Amino acid sequence: MAPSLHLSISEHLRHHVVVGDYQPGDQLPSEHQLMQEFGVSRTTIRRAIANLVNQGLVTAHQGKGVFVSEQHKVAYSLSSPLVFLEDDMARQGIPLVVTLLEAGVVSVPDTARHLVMASANPVQAAMLQEAQVYMQKKRLDINNRPGALDYTYLSPALSPLLDAAPLDRMHHMVFPLLEQQGIAISRIEAILECTHADPDICHHLEVPLGHPLIVYRHTAYTTENQPVAYGETISRGDRFCYSLTIPR
Amino acid sequence: MAPSLHLSISEHLRHHVVVGDYQPGDQLPSEHQLMQEFGVSRTTIRRAIANLVNQGLVTAHQGKGVFVSEQHKVAYSLSSPLVFLEDDMARQGIPLVVTLLEAGVVSVPDTARHLVMASANPVQAAMLQEAQVYMQKKRLDINNRPGALDYTYLSPALSPLLDAAPLDRMHHMVFPLLEQQGIAISRIEAILECTHADPDICHHLEVPLGHPLIVYRHTAYTTENQPVAYGETISRGDRFCYSLTIPR
DNA sequence: AAGGCTCACTTGTTATAACAAGTTACACTT
DNA sequence: AAGTGTAACTTGTTATAACAAGTGAGCCTT
Image (cartoon, rainbow over the protein chains, first blue to last red):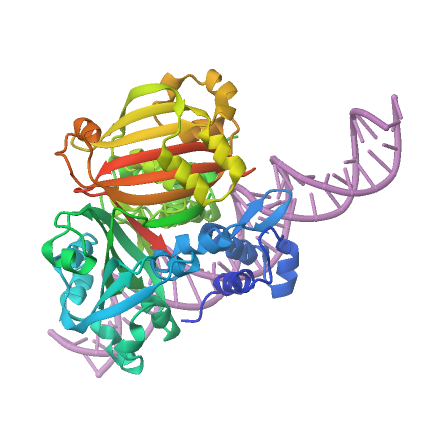
């Protein structure tokens, strides 16, 4: 289960970028230098760099070198929309005020099942149909008015870990907490759509009936392709939703 | 300018998937078979397949084989939302029927100005407030019903190039055409929000007044950080919008 | 028949090698 | 001084090779 070499090196280089050892615009050591530094072949170095390029952290130019992207801070948010929805808003100066409205054990709503059914994997579907740890959170916008509702469902497989991290500490930033406890999210499937506000939502978001809303549904999978978290975020659609910078 | 081998092979395989020669769940020929079929080394075949895996079209299982993904129709490449909005839909077999409704020279709407203001660069703001080449396009969905409206504004700096490529040839795929003429788009800022349908939109999209709509606004910047294109895409929000698989 | 073993198949990872192609600096020619 | 050309870098592409690791069928033992 040990990570492969090129992934380790990729992580190592990314760490330097995130920490700030490499500033935006800086040139990475050449492939030859990295080969000597890590004592591996060019194949491995190139795969590690290809990994970073795919994530948008660096850009390679034939004949010149590999350079740290200018907007790597938002590039990171692009490769992980979970961060974009939680972490990144705070990073953009939008205060993230979250209230935990409800928590308990329930079953997943039909919308989630639909999402899983699309992948046509009976095992996964069965897993998500089981009882889940459930959280409902309200998020305030800049004006301290209700901005979004968050529904999070965690797989029962996570129960032992959840005991170690009680629910009241999970009132925000679920994914970082999961990763901190060794649960690696490798893939996320997301669907974005737009609906009217039903009476229940109206109450929480303080909008009139039928108000336009953006619904963001996502399922997070581990490296073993097991769905461990499903979430819905319902935001008011009439105001700023999100902005991102996309490196090509 | 000839595409590299592994990209050609990747395109070739993807074509089979999109056309339907390979059904979801089908197993691709093994690496060894593909090596013989295309007469290339395993390196090249593996890079071509890695390409497809990155795009979410296929899934590889060690010891078993490579299989066509179940959800390949909704797997978008996240690294380029412009492609997702134009090129990629066609590539995935979703017919891209576009009608050019109107074209001319106008000034940018206030929404665009707001987008530029957010980046707090007066030079950029001034540039986008000038008169622009303007295009309005209607896009049909799978059922040949109106699916989205497209508004594209091109910077006056592009005028000489636009003469070479007349507007009637730009009825779709604006970005590829720009790149073809040497204009490199390095960054895109995008905002996503949700509104009601106003009477004008109702007419084109054939929806009742007040119908929920998703608005996707984007500004494209060159490598010199100059905004050269602004676009709005207004889609019906009540139906499937997009779904993506995000590799971490 | 049940269980375990081996073997042939698959993809995964890494190493080595050679050439292509873009960039840059420096020396050399004009 | 201006331009040219070469040489030494860089990344890009492909080939060959070897071994690791997961899978499954079939044989073989019990």
